[in-house]
Length: 205
Image (cartoon, rainbow, N blue to C red; front, side, top):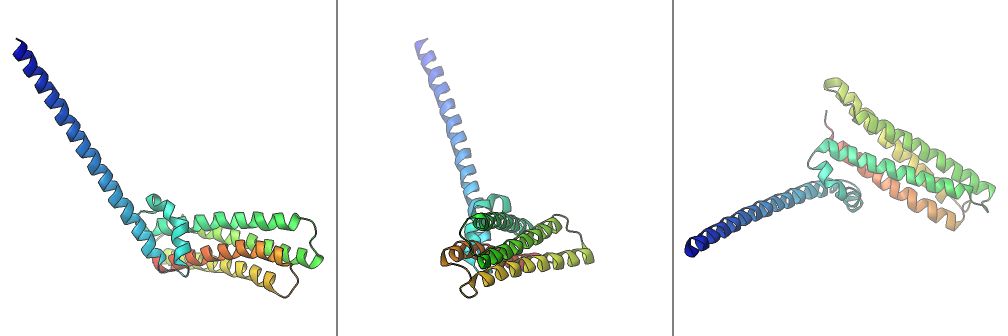
């Protein structure tokens, strides 16, 4: 009787052990698959960013969205535009806060205000681009939509560069104000340039 009980116990233990091993193997396989996919997605972003003007900045801004982008060209472009739009809004807030601080000369106030207007236009153009990308059609309509997106993003980049050009001109803006604004706007312009490159390389009509 004791031998029979022992045999049953050993059989139960063996079954439980085999079940555990099976689950463990399934879990390892799933982790391995996820890791492989993650690496594939990250390599896709890295490869795509290599075609931009600022590949390191491009990859840094998009790598955390690899599981959203995967290997989808449209999602890549959308995500890049969304990230750029967020940066544009943060830049606008920074420049606006500088405009409100005391101690600015009348010339500085005028230039900073112009920069705020340029960034505001950039935000509108990036929003228009993103809205158009959310409603892409087919055929000749798609061709026109892509052309519009490229035009708007290019215009946004021009506005951002106009801001930095005005900030850099002569000695009308103090070094401290210039450095604060320029650093933020240059970062925005890099992201916008990268978004435009990704759109040009990945959106096809």
